[in-house]
Image 1: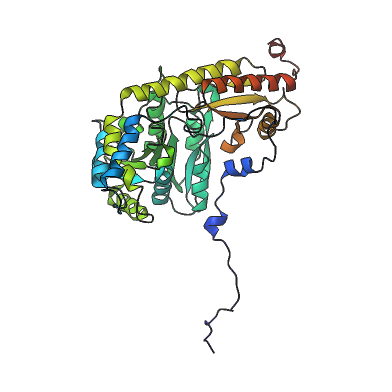
Image 2: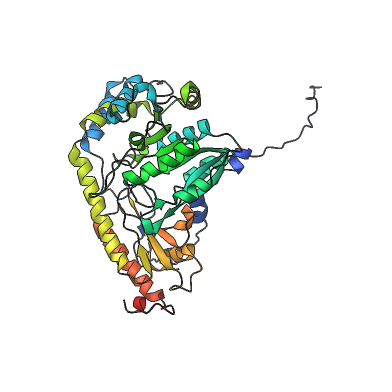
Length: 434
């Protein structure tokens, strides 16, 4: 008879791991639970997906596409690359982002499978199970998804819509304790479309320096700012605070499916030292790096993409943002927050990606932003993400990458929806006169 394994009863018992059970994506949970069907008489308009390629109106530049073709045709990039990326590709990224205030060399760059993996590696190298990280509210839901799957606690610091989504610095600092492993700063912001000023970034850095907390800077939308605003890379403003800056090709070059991101290690005081650098290398070896063909194209992408491409993309996004903001600001019960960059606008609903606040007291038949956006789909076939997905109820997010004609139609439908469901609240005659 075959021998039995000592101490083990022979029976099937296959269960998911704690990591799998602890992995939770709030966007998927909320969106997938929406059973509502769109109005069959109206074409669906999705303002919910942060993918600029969906509608075909924002193609990448021909130089970017040609760089990929050339890399593929060369036959040089079909094998494995080092887990942190080809040295030549890392040199190109270092050169592209190097500046006197924040110098970079190839050893300071780790290439990743998209910016999402860059964030995952940074969290994994900085925090242990039982420690905590500081995450913006509203903020990108992936931070929580990744952290909690690793047993890391998430503490939420507030962004203030009345101050163009600046951080509540006093509340932020009150969250820090001996178990705080890092502070995540997302600038420009998803989902808010906000861009922090230099002075505000300096105040954030002062908190981090005072409390000796390293920063994970999510700068995937870096340089995607509208006229009148300026993107300041966080690392250029401090030599004291160690910073892991995450970025990639996805948004600025409009190729999110190509999955190439990077981590820039800024550590001029040698606070991270070799341990954090070595830790990132070890973690990168789990999947052996991003697509080699994209790495092979990176030199040409960074050097040959014309400035007109960046300018035209931002001009389109700003035009759509202004159009959307103006249309929604005129609707009773909604209060959009004007964006300064990225691809979003937030709208406040007085129920009650631009953020829009819903003034819920004016929409008494809806309990919350999830119900509001569900009914918007059912009646008008317009899909916006409820900001509960970003831990900020009574707002919804609008993606501003859709073609202008679709944006106009979507805003018209949102206006019709709000006019049908809006109710005057006592004590607010100015709204009723709109």
